[in-house]
Amino acid sequence: MTHLILTGATGLAGSAFLSHALSSPSISHVSILSRRPVPLATSHPNAAKATVHIHADFATYPDSLLGSLHGATACVWALGGSSVGMSEAEYVRMTRDYPVAAASAFAELNKPGTGESAARPFTFVYVSADDADQAGTSSALYRRVKGQAERDLLSLMDARPSLRVYNARAGAIIPDAGAWIADRPMMAREKYFYFPVAAPVLKKVYPNIISPTGKLAEALVKLAIGDGESLGKEDGKNGLFNGGRTVGNKYLREMVGLPN
Image (cartoon, rainbow, N blue to C red; front, side, top):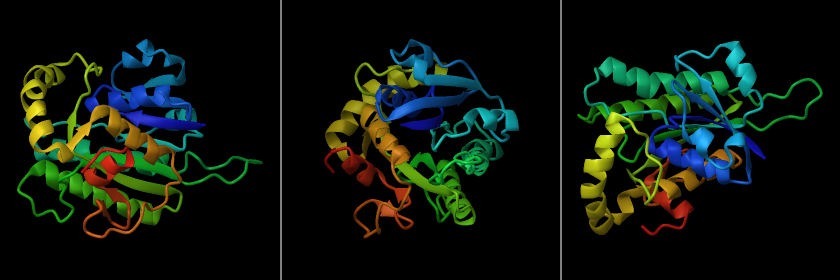
């Protein structure tokens, strides 16, 4: 049984992950870090498995919070948002600085206490984008910054033996029918404009770039509860990069039986 940490629980990917994790018999508890209450954490039939920690600053993690999270074995970092309307500094802080600070703080959470057996390394799953640019040459801010976050997380893993990182490069995230969507202005615009217009087109013309929320959540759970080791060598076609640490949407889809 696994104790997981989740951020971004009111977003598309995060809410789908939370629903799937609470329904999974392999997961004993989900600790949610959020700036606001998470309705799904109280309305889900297995809500007893969830604890919401109201956390205002995702750049810092006080000992009191880390003590509450001790014993967690993985984190799925789904916190994020559009770069539209944000300065570059603000977007870098949210998209790169926050997850790197969290991964550094969480790396020792699974460290055994006195008399306990040795624990496996902590797994940090960063929900990225399939077109993230680690080379930093793209003109698109979100591509460059997500790529920078991926690079910095991998560098942090190299420096911290107790940490394992997966960059999960989701494609176009489309909610499943009946999926829970937060009642917030940005999500409402996507729900009523983007999803009904774009989703049917993408599903028909470019089905292999889609990340349906339920299947994406299933793939993220598999990464989070796995052994944290490399998924294999990249061959230019299988969707794996950085020695099996950066996982493209092609591989994510194959993990859960979706065609490419």
